[in-house]
Image 1 (tube, helix red, strand yellow):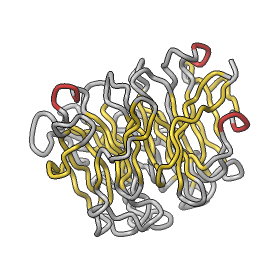
Image 2: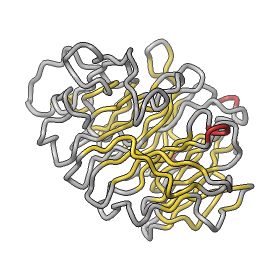
Image 3: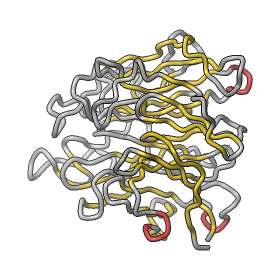
Length: 353
């Protein structure tokens, strides 16, 4: 079954993400400057769902409002979470509440869940998502600068260069799940789920298997896609992909190898996507889609018994755009979030040709 892209919405201002509440037909689009826009019944609603522009620092290329996610029980509790950089450049994850109008969040309801000091204006991570067990996962970059100058990726006593896993239901502002890998060991912070990451801009969960798929943006030579395992160390900055980075020769034992890597001849900023689990494209069930922001390539593969198979290039049909993110709706259908050179953005749905 051939694929193509179908326009869903235009007129967005530098969109960088898309999310939807469980069981909801609406689409919520994250704009870098600080707004969450709403697409309802196929139309872009004029009034933003949430406007945080006055408190979001977005001057850096990788700063801004980076992601939104809705609580698994959003229909009952109206809780949503956002990830943004504040006016000082720090990383903030905050909770908001929907207002009495279901199409508008209450901007005065903010409760800060997590705040992390972050001075350089890059490698801010971005993605937040609820895992299949109901915990909130948070992607944080290595703190910025070229080559991880602060050594955060390999330091289990800092939150930077990690994906965190926290419980936003058991305590204020959050609790630490007892089965997190460093809990009770004294060897690292309890919030950490995986580490050794450079800038995991986008990750996702396979809604059928629960697998955690991570797109980690590389430094000089390689981009990588990883499969998350609890306590896994993905090597940065000892490694970039499968290759020694800090030294010409290095000990690679103890690191989790990427499922897939590609060189900067192909692209220079991986956009992690999703394993397709929708109904409209049955021939693509179980296929992982990913892209590259710089080159505009869109590709896919299947991962079967630990082996990458069925690699395909969809750039002619789906790519050639500056793709900032994929999105997945409540039915498991996939979307592309794109920007142009003028910052104007669009959302496309991946459909059968």
